Length: 521
Image 1 (cartoon, one colour):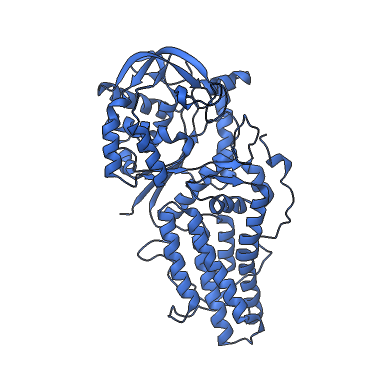
Image 2: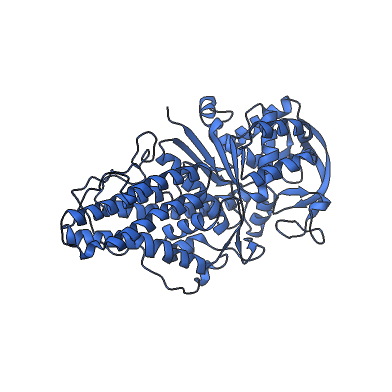
């Protein structure tokens, strides 16, 4: 039976169009899903929209629309953006769906029945944008949210509370027993430190608004939006509705989240799962912010960048590759259009694109357009040796959630293949066995590169694959599977026509960013 890999993004507030920060998370999750499909695993990839809460209700009112009508419109913005960016999610969940209402109510009822929910009154500083309360020491300036830098509001209301404080010891034991449950280690340490400072019970309902899921035993209350949102991961796996499906997927869940929602996912959510009687998530991967001019993208700061506009300008593959290659997952990264163009020219146009064009051209002129087979993977075959090393390095990098390193390893094989051609100069050779050997090795290296690169650049990978005369697709499930798969040296069959075409990645001048891509619409 194949292994299973269930990967999730956070669900996004549809109060505005997707920006490059949300695209970064979603494209990263997509690349991980694509890689695990390549490895022959059974994959479930979930994303969606978080549609309840005060922020959405207020935004809808500003548009003179009901929350239902507003979210019906805005959720489609996210669906369309992910279609443009070639995101291969298997499911798109909206928290207004009946399946989610049922799951949230059953999940909440289970925690209540287990004695971990009680009624009380809560007062505190509340950030509408975060949909979260903050303690006084967490605020910045004159009572501003530390994330959005907007003024917080003082709220007092009757709520139901979750006994988070009762789970501190169990959470620490869980972290001790599962040292790799949160990556990178720095984020695990942050979560553990948060727990050790002491946990307070947390409000999980509201009476001040009615835009939300009713608490099952007290419909005067609606479930608080962050609590409602966290349950989406269980909803999509079948919680409370499909026991077999839930058992199939839940042990394999991997949450990809930004560092600003670490405490929700790495502290509150595992405790909620324990309270409801299910296993906590298998793994949480915490990434940093994609910054613009050193600042997190935010509607309030007017520094959002539209990923759809960028993809239209430079190509979907170029944007995907840049997001995955430029930023080390877990660290902050600073985006600029100039860096995007520079990475495009260096890695895609000058290296991968040039290699594909060069090989096809020389096969056309020296081999009659028919690709020769590669030489055997002997100790003297430098490219075969490098290819084996690169495959191992890429596998290890994808396994530790490091697309940056996986692509870095892949492009080492691109560089070495270009260097081998520069050294041998087959375009100066007479047709015959010697030129066939050089070009056969280059074709085989390019075949392996295309499979390894396909999670990042699926359009170019498919086109290069076609030009190499290969059948099927480079991203076919199982191509990177072990044992077997298609990443061992010697897979290029030879004797097939190699096609030359227009440059796959034409070089771009370092012009200024398109105005419409530089800010929120």
